[in-house]
Image (tube, rainbow, N blue to C red):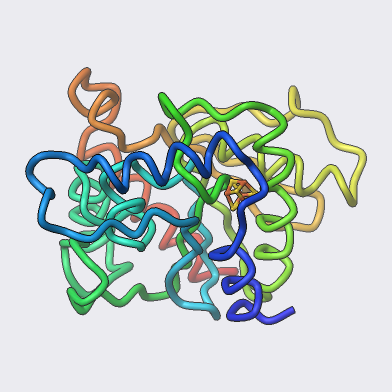
Length: 226
Ligand code: SF4
């Protein structure tokens, strides 16, 4: 299946009742500062360079970020942080990601999430993750040039391992998650861990721009040899 066909299916999806209700409730109630905007309020697809060697996997769209703007990592604080770092490391043409018309282009990078709808409290159920995995699975299958998968947060990391479990006898315990962890996958690709660039992690100093840019530059260097 092509990515564009897959993305159409994703956008129309209403399989998880709790998430459908939540994403639409947010889109109706809105945050005060965006009260005059029309929220997207639907599932979010991946975005970027379909021939990329680097795939980045987050958890899910943010309530007033992707769920508002209709593009992954767009229009919220996580996006502000991430795109400053991605720009610095040379993976995009500008340091901002604010809305679909902002001119953002990703270079050698495809960005997606393990779950395509915003979950309450950023906590999806295991059934929701399992249901949406079907799309994540097809998405990875469509991205033929991927050499490194960089997971932003543990849930995205585990979704990547689950993808590989379909084809190889691997165990989660053999893949240690941490900021900057590099693990080779059974097919020769690499799975890299990173703390999620959420305001909580940034504000507590768990992640900062120096650490993130350092990791992204290291990944970029590795990609030159893959
Ligand atoms: S989380 Fe995934 S499977 Fe569930 S409704 Fe959204 S797109 Fe569909």
